[in-house]
Amino acid sequence: MKRVTARPENPHQATLLRLLRERARSRAELGDVAELSRSRLNLELDRLVELRLVEQAGLAASRGGRRSGMVRLAATMRFAGIDVGATSVDVAVTDGGLEVLGRASEPCDVRDGPVAVLDRATEMLAKLRGQGLFTQLHGAGIGVPGPVSFREGMPVAPPIMPGWDRYPVRETLGQELGCPVVVDNDVNIMALGELHAGLAKQVDDFLFVKIGTGIGCGIVVDGKIYRGVSGSAGDIGHIRVDDAGPICACGNAGCLEAYFGGAA
Ligand SMILES: [Zn+2]
Image: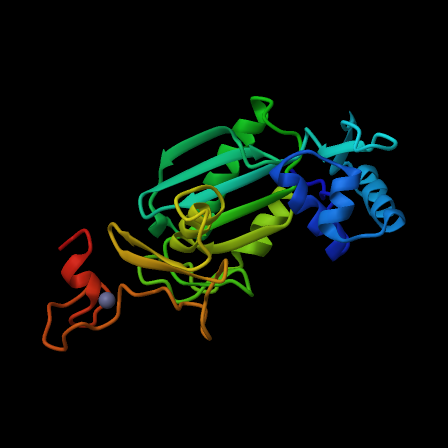
């Protein structure tokens, strides 16, 4: 999976791809929604077609004048999602509209460290590739069960992930998969999932609280993940509830997780 993927070259192209992710649209409609002049729109769309990110899809119904050409995301566009859990790894491959085309899940201990776990994930993706699900990925996202520096694309001091502190997950996977990669905390990603395709689709501001082995929170403000200064704004599991409380797995006393996490 070493070939490097084509990617959008400017914000206009990124906007057009985002609009096309929702559905195929006519050039006329895209120009209206993206507020681009006809010449600029056609220039950017032609470039996206050249990059094989977008393809023509016949003619739209007439709006009165000449019929406008329909465009859609390239049918070959593929994204990968990787979910690293405490005791399992899940991978999925989607099309450009983020419909899941195939997935796989295997038991895997996050404490085996980043080299072993990421190798496992890329092997699982290679299997899906072998089944014909994709030839080239256009982007990948990975969620990990701990705090992440989103800007640097790496976990930072994750309590249950020995060996992962500041490991360059984004760089390593990007080289392995040959596409842009984003790394985030798993609960932030769950919140984004609800925002884009779930219960929170109609709201801009909400909290997503996950109570499992650990406790985490995704904070969405104005339609975006709020990360705070250090990038771990939603990391509520180790907020101290009571100084005299039970000892937590992290070594401190009285954390929220020590009261309400899986072990408790
Ligand atoms: Zn704790």
